[in-house]
Length: 353
Image 1 (cartoon, helix red, strand yellow):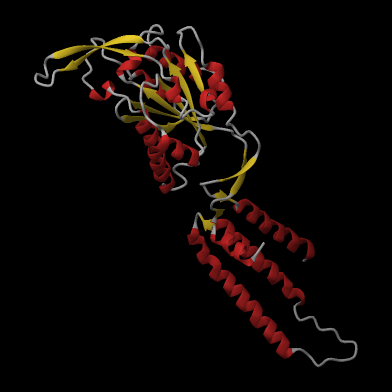
Image 2 (cartoon, helix red, strand yellow):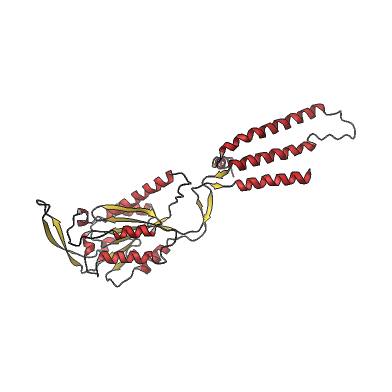
């Protein structure tokens, strides 16, 4: 290890109770007393004869042990700790991002009871399976014409289920939320890494004793019918750079279905015009963003199908269960070893003196 590395390592050491370092003046007093004693003995030593032996330190070595003991006790009381210590981890946890399409086309009933209901059921099945491990963090983005971040990354599955249950379509088909009348998948995908970066930055700015935050491997699960004409060029570039794979559950049939929506009249907001719109699943569009192209897409063209094996296998493929060194955000305390050294010095002093 180079001198620069040693210096950098020393800079990482902090103290939980730095006020005890003021006791170092006691240590200085012992060292000064020992130095003055040795100087005095050197000056007053007798003239050397043929067989004479003069030990400069002699019994004063007890003071050396004493000074080392005091030094260790002071450091122990101060509570040394290493910031950014490396530890072995094999958790294999993931940050799983759910991107859910809430646009009007997801209300289509070409798969029963509807694309929306099948998507919700599929996610709930995944939450109750072995595909989600303890310690995994989940987040939910909901999109139509614009993307909304429903909850940040969290291991609170109950909160996630609550937020998922809030996604709905109007029973009377009157879409007051104009965002649900459009679909912009690429904009939603671009929003995801931006939002997560803000969360990372916020948590890393907090003291380490409040939250221990280390980003895990991140995987996006996209639930949509793909009824959008996005090119995904920008999104693909971003996700490739961040090494964030996207797996798609495509909901709907090739034949599609007619969806009736009621839209507020431009001239009279209290009046609603009915529109019949045919929508079908767009697998070719989704191949542009899915990991591995078509291999990263599961087509849910029937309410009786299950995407469990597809989702579990792809999540498992990104887990790293091998031991690896990861950086701890919270300091690693090591004052107990220092105190043990102090006790060792006491033991040696008793044995030899």
